[in-house]
Image (cartoon, rainbow, N blue to C red; front, side):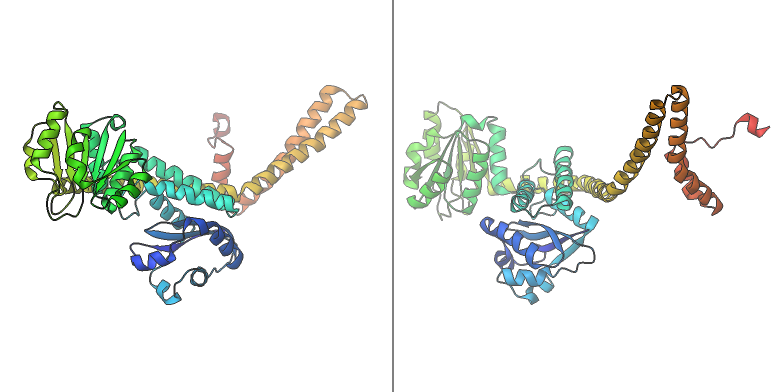
Length: 426
């Protein structure tokens, strides 16, 4: 059985092509069924489809030559010529190594991103639910996810934020160690603020409000996170209620002035306020940073933090690659063990059959009144001779052929001492 990883990602394909090939969650199960049914030789299948990659992992029958590209052109709106220079193939151990790098975030656009490991796990759970996950891909997924977890646990690959939204929330955590008891106000309702809202929600922020020029957009985003919506014009009178303020409105003029923040600090009885201005042009007047009890950061401040963290992650990635290498070796070893399990079972079954045969003879002799000690002696000798017959013949044949490698292996296997005794030397 062979393992194949086939797909494309942000390095090999444009976003326009990735969008057309990406598989929505609600059709992945059907796609798995289709690829197993329509592609010759495919016995197991799993699909990872995110904004940055679409990859098929397949277990194939021996000698199979799957045409996944043509299947993909039938299933998604894409031409064969578009796939020729944008897709990649990885086989067996290289496929395992690739999946481990993906799951660990080493192959991500944002190095070390934490979400991908969960996405890989979900992909294999979907395959299991669809009935396309068998023993081959199950082994691959288990060792890959275990390796990714070791990378997360033992390296610094995901410890430091390298996205603006994540960095903003991480800074808030440094100012307020327990965000569960804090309130946050987000100014704007675009993609960046949406990401910030996601990160704050994942940290269980106590209370969340969204302020936007267009109230309906604020209401849509706020409802997603169980928050409250308001218009930008209402921010000044409500500012004192919030410990964290993060802004990205796209306004050409500041929407929060020094006077409004100064008044809010007085109402807060000098409880600190953390503010991040992600916008360019800036949403918060720079002079706000001069106020006591206000921690104001700009996009440039975050960029400096992110650049430093990128370098740390790159250094951590070198350590992570060692875990991936170990994981791929473990996968190869486990596949070999699994492949030879039938041989092990046959070997043990043969020994058990010999045992039952000799035991039956011994019991019949005892029933006839034979001496128990003699019966046990014959039972032991006969069983030992039969068990050792095949290895003895193999040893003699190996010796006759000069197979020192086999002889050394058998000596190691049976833990035999090859040193001569003093009596033999004399």
